[in-house]
Structures are given as structure tokens and as C-alpha cells.
Length: 288
Image (cartoon, rainbow, N blue to C red; front, side, top):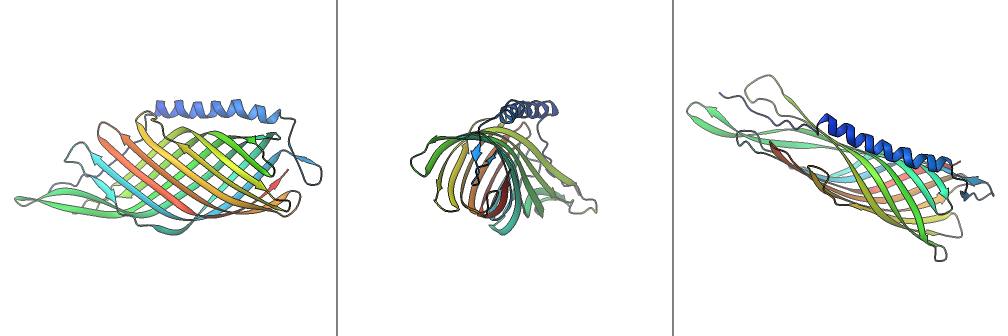
């Protein structure tokens, strides 16, 4: 009986990873000194001037991931998943914001998403005098880690409204783990996919500050560019309301929708994946 072959997906070459990580850190080095030298800042309710804001929260989301792995060599194992909508999974996020002027700021944020499901692989096995098609089904764990540095600027303030735009650079780490064991052997083979994508983002936002403690905000972000051997797009929309408890402390409730689509073409395989997440989020923060 022939031994089952399983898929193994490697990330970019180490030199490419080092280069894109260097570019990401270089962008940080240019933007943060400007933040530290900023003299103007948003005035607090009590007349003080707060320059920094910390926010941390939890998202409770529905997810709909999709994955297809097509090897060039037909003797290798094609892989796909059939994950239905995954309900009410919670993730954490945190951000640090620095005001540059009354109308501009930069923000460093970290967000983690993840999902579990099933992955399937198809392979022909040699049994006696025949080749028998078999399908393997095993658990799949998928995780996305996102580190983003973003610059926001208000462009127009009609009354209590504020309309603005944003530019950002993000490092997106995509990790997937699955096990496709040999059907007739006791030894398992662990397969791992790990890929780092650094990409720019553009976006816009609108805010409405009431005369009371409430502030409403809607924002969006978008990117659709080829990055080396990666093709894809990312669309995100956030809507939320902040309730200020005091001069420094606030609570918030919002809704987030994000849709990530990626295609990775290599000599040995084509990998296509999408990840849709939507749900409400709760957070708290303070100014200092």
C-alpha cells in the first residue's frame, strides 16, 4: 500500500521576510518621533490636554473561513475545507493612540482572530490491483494576527461632524495547522502554513460628537494590490459609539465587518483562502 502524501505549505523565503519586517519597522521609526515631538493635543473636558489614549476590548463574532490548496503535481494531496459559519467566538484587541495636532493622530493596534473547523484531503491509494480514491478529514486551526500602524487626519468639520481619511501599514500573520494522518499507519504528519504579509491600507471615517457624553464613529479601510506572489484584497467596516464616563475614562460598543481574500501562487501549489468575520465588540479605555 502506498504511503499517503499530505500537503505542506511553507511561507516566504527568510530573506523576503526580513526585508518586509525591516520596511515595517522603518515606517514606525519615521512616524513615532513625530508623535513624541507633537505640542498640540486634544483638550480634555476639565481643561487639561491629553495626548495619549489606550483602548482594549473584546469582539464576539461570526466567522466564515474558506481554504483551497491545489498542488501542481497531481500525485500530491489537494486540500479544501467546508467550514460553516462559526458563531459567537471571542477575540481580543488593544490599541495605543497619540495625538499629533487637534486634527491628526497616529495609532498602533493589535488584533487577533482565529477559528477552528475541518479540513479535507483527497488522495488515491494503491490497494491490491486498484487505485482507490480516499478522503481524509481532520481538524483545522486558523489564526490571524494583525499589527497595524495608522495615521488619521480630519479633513472637514461641518458643525459637530468630523470627516477624515487615514493611511496605514499593517503586518498580517496567517497561521494554519492541520493533521492529515496516513490512513494505514500509526504515525501522524503535522502540516503547518505560516505566512507574513505586509501591506498598505487606505480608509476614511466620520464622527459625530454630541453635546453630551456620546460620540458616534463609522470607519472603513481597504487594500487591493499585488504584493510579490500574493494577490488579494481586504475590506473592513467599523461602526461604534463611545460613552465618556469622566474626563479620562470611556466605554464603547460597536460592530465590525471584515473580509480578507488571498491567493498565493507558488511553483508547487496554488493556495486560495478567504476569511469573513462580523460581530459586535465591547471596549474600554482612558486618556492620559
